[in-house]
Image 1 (tube, rainbow, N blue to C red):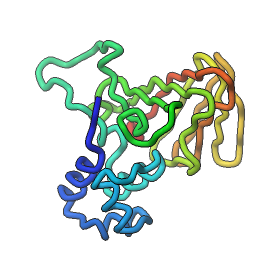
Image 2 (cartoon, helix red, strand yellow; image 1 turned 180 degrees about the vertical axis):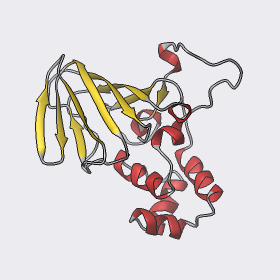
Image 3 (tube, rainbow, N blue to C red; image 1 turned 60 degrees about the horizontal axis):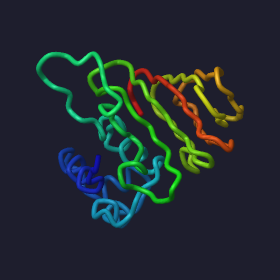
Length: 191
């Protein structure tokens, strides 16, 4: 799936009647940074994009969501029908190892967000800690992951999990030599 991140950000910003300067001020960035992102000349990190969308306000899932069929409700999803939320895997960022956050369905239409997360060795959610409304939980399916929540750090193995208030600063990092797979949930959908 290829998405024009800069164009999408510009359209969302303009639909909320925000100037680049307004958005930059709210998000703690410069107007020049917003301009470069909107022109697709700069790729924001997950944390920077999250800060921009929080300033609008709009969740990552809403930003990247594809509209589900307005006809009959969809209850089942094939692997190719998940929505990729990870900026790296839709053309932002570079490097061979890419974090993948695949969402089940359109979280904007539900009160629960389910993610299938893949962390190749050495990948993480970025140098900045994440923070958003809601609670999140997950179970490690394979590999290992270092999870930081507030001032606590723990390495989780397959079969182990986490549950915390997402307003606490948090970060995920694969410190292992194999891919880490996690299935997680967030309620309400705010990531």
